[in-house]
Image (cartoon, rainbow, N blue to C red; front, side, top):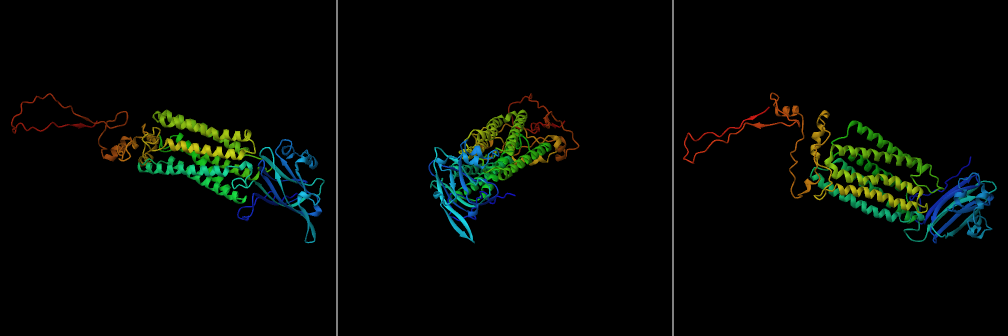
Length: 527
């Protein structure tokens, strides 16, 4: 059975010494095949460089290193083309471009010499190759030996782009990712800090609701994700290797932040903490099932990307069955979001100042992710895809967090502020029986009345009591033996006896005992 050992293995930063420069690739090939892909790299137009060290038994001579670039007549014409044999795949190369490195002592530029090791002659080849082209190009490195006999090779390769700290170790499609991540890390840290400051103000007014805490969680996890990405790319910029675990952890945290934010949007659309105290049992089950499916799909995407993405092709994470599944779930979430917002507005039209801008802003957000994925798959050149998509994706997340921060800021000038029920009142609603309809908050336009005077507390709603059943009131007051009249709004009616103001008064005289009559007595009847 054919074996390929350590094919295009990138060592972790822990096992790699600090003297390594550029993208460092090391591995061993041992197979009966005659044409094997090793690695790929996107070189700059004038500063691309490949330094190599190859070793293999002289008895397996003579092997070649083939350099393909991304033109349709080159790499796409030979990769995964079972109808072409080794000779036909070599025939597409242009000799004038020096795309073949013959690993023999006869080819001077290969730097090969014969060494003896344990009584066996070994060909050791040490050299390099510079790359120049009219634009940034993907280059694909292949090992071949047409005519049979199999391949056996130990290889080390270092691929670089110039000498700059920000470019030397990066493939051209990765240029700017580190700078972009650092910039967004600073911005997201500022957003998270502002959310903490706003949360402090909201907590002082008993308006720090669960949905706002979810927003803070999403923003905080986003900051952690960018921090891990920045550390990974900084290590990679230093030694060309980095630590893959940091990158994976950054991706996981990025996905967690997205899922928490998505769940928060659906809950707000359904009115949770805005028009109702809790989600119905059936709604909770639907949300749990949906978020579980979404999470499992994300996990499948990570596994698919790690195990099934072909390193010989420049692929995007959403260019896979799991990626298309995520886009479908995103659109399904938008349909659910629309329905929830429309129902909330139907029952609480006074909440339009919040829900209309909320719905408009996040309609763009829901469609931004699928549109970005389609553009990345079909509209962006592969040699520029990763850096462009990284910036767009972070920009979409920043847009979503900034909009929510603005429309929920605790300010007297904010006409869109959604919360009007205090957290201390929700406990009363939650403890009430379900049949009384206590899940919904009382109608209240609210907005920013609590923030009109920051120096004084707002007592207008401090002692407000929600409408409850007559039975509860009578039990609480101990008036079980009395009947109380209720209007259609389930409120107690109190009346007083009429007062006769027709009495005429004589001119003021000295008070007498007969003149000291008691004042009229008011009578309160409970019907």
